[in-house]
Length: 144
Image (cartoon, rainbow, N blue to C red; front, side, top):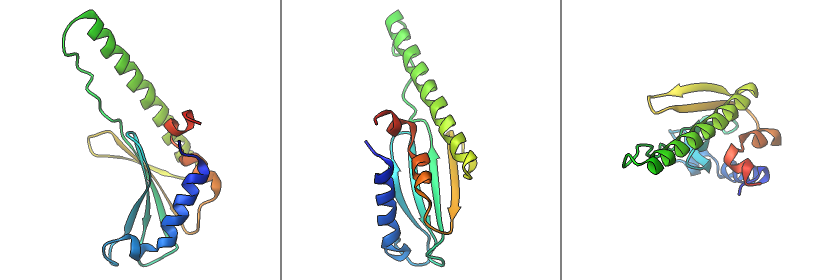
């Protein structure tokens, strides 16, 4: 179970490393994973030119479980229907999560054909604790 203070502490650890230490070369931006689940990856992106320039990217994508029935029995069809309903319910929760991020200043983009939704926001100073509360994905909020 992750909480807002955990994200903030890990963010501070990433920032304290400095971009050159977090990246293979000093010419490339450094990308560090702040949080990851089957549905979401939260990344901290830093530029080597400006140590105070930080971008937080939130990638949301369904985990794509197999929803195809392996047989045509009524129990298998019911299982498939239940899995589909659960997946769609989770997708709705994550779309609402993305909408909250968008209303808080994150820009939203749809990437590729795999249903990847990217929420991104650039910061010139350390984000306030409220941002880390918003970053907690639905799966982390349910386990609290």
